[in-house]
Amino acid sequence: DGGITQSPKYLFRKEGQNVTLSCEQNLNHDAMYWYRQDPGQGLRLIYYSQIVNDFQKGDIAEGYSVSREKKESFPLTVTSAQKNPTAFYLCASSLDRGAYEQYFGPGTRLTVT
Amino acid sequence: QKEVEQDPGPLSVPEGAIVSLNCTYSNSAFQYFMWYRQYSRKGPELLMYTYSSGNKEDGRFTAQVDKSSKYISLFIRDSQPSDSATYLCAMLRSDYGQNFVFGPGTRLSVLP
Figure: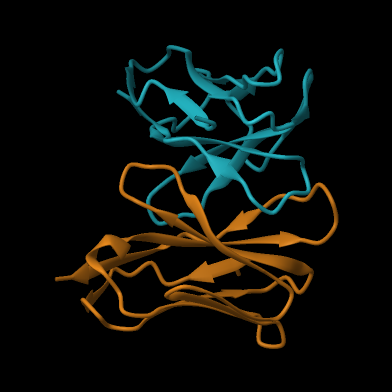
């Protein structure tokens, strides 16, 4: 089965701790994305990557970091610098950067207290 | 003004009703228009896409784009309880490498 997996589904952390969210895809897609979803707001782009070892900041990159060492993996680290990290995080991929269809993972709900 | 506006709902309709979901946008450069469906606590999935203006039909779903009014719609005929979800519109400019812009989503409940 091809698709995108995200783990864990729920994550709880104390304020001040860094936390890494996992995203893996076996669709052989070049482009991968991280979005944040808050109630009443559209998906907001955190980071995206068009190819291995390359990534770009999205609209709300402050307090986040990513890596793209393998084509199938695009982990997101939420650092202690992120002022309001509690949210639903969605990873997505597309064939390439210009593709109109993005495939989404099931999401990770992060709660920081 | 937000680039994409969408009534968040919630919208409740009886089973079998025709549902109309809408988005307005401000950027005339958008060329691709998508509708994603998101069930509770799940990732969105692409429902339909339209390039430029016009209508597109797929089963019970019809997507319409009116670029002159900067207005897009998704119609659901014979709505079913399984259609209960949040519907997100999304837009993409024609030039390669640009970011998607998503609306906040409309939460729909179809009551049996």
